[in-house]
Length: 254
Image (cartoon, rainbow, N blue to C red; front, side, top):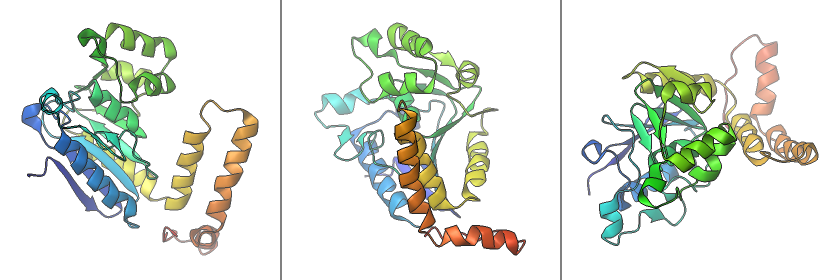
């Protein structure tokens, strides 16, 4: 079957692209299995440090492909769940590059990422209740963890969308840009991450993820656990050495 999710690498940055523009990048069985296979490649590649998830066409993603669902082909994968992504045990930062509507499962794909770059033509919504469904791919608990609870509640109960500007004000979107520039904006953000020690980045990400809603006491414990991992790496010695030698550090990611 054709590649409807592509993956390419430039330096330490991997670019995933949803490529079903005619179907509004709806998530089919094939989309999910290809995305999961690419995530496997990205996660196991020691030279891939940061990922970007973009989409071709005027719609980022309209969510589940109902044709695929009704034909009896499951659109969830064993490991990653919906889109092969939303439950995937990722360890590396992933930036969503959103240029157009991200609706239903499309917003849940965005919420599964760590950072979001969006153009002014992006919109975000979970319209499931309009079809007597509920957002089942993480939206109903990831959205209130990402933006103010009452606004998340409004999106969940009305099914209405918000603009990129509103999403930026609410902190869902890290960076707002012009239409057509989301991938280059996301690449610039990815580069700002990729200059840093990759294991320190991954362990920092884990602490942020794991401590959400936890007490300070648990926060200290989890921070300590992940600090231990960083201290044991070769890169831990390279940081201070590069500083003393007045040069840029060369990270090995081990």
